Length: 136
Image 1 (cartoon, one colour):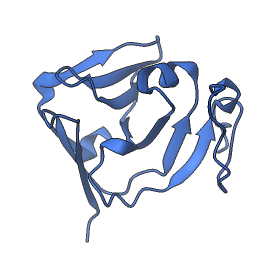
Image 2: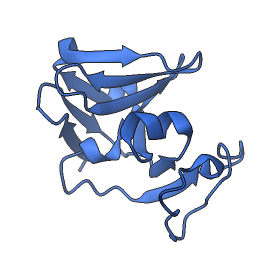
Image 3: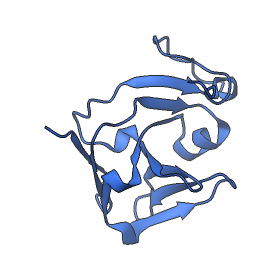
Image 4: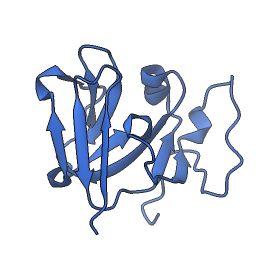
């Protein structure tokens, strides 16, 4: 049976469904992700072609850098997506998924930029000071 997951923004104006396996969660502790979410960005990813979207007229994009854009609901402000320029995949914030999601933590990146008001989780997944190594 093919894996399906669904989710939405806080107000429900944007809904999505994914088909197929999702990547393990990457927790990004960089300053941009912290400023957008208030803590850190925990996201999975899927090929764009394996995601359907409802309420796209409520989806706004913010280009935070030359490398990527961030998608959010223009009605309730929920942070939902991150997409690298020209990428065939899209990152989806883990908290937007309906439960049970089946998602598991896979890694922590940009740990050297984490805020001073929390400690990194003591989990059994890799913790990188910057981006994940190219071989990871």
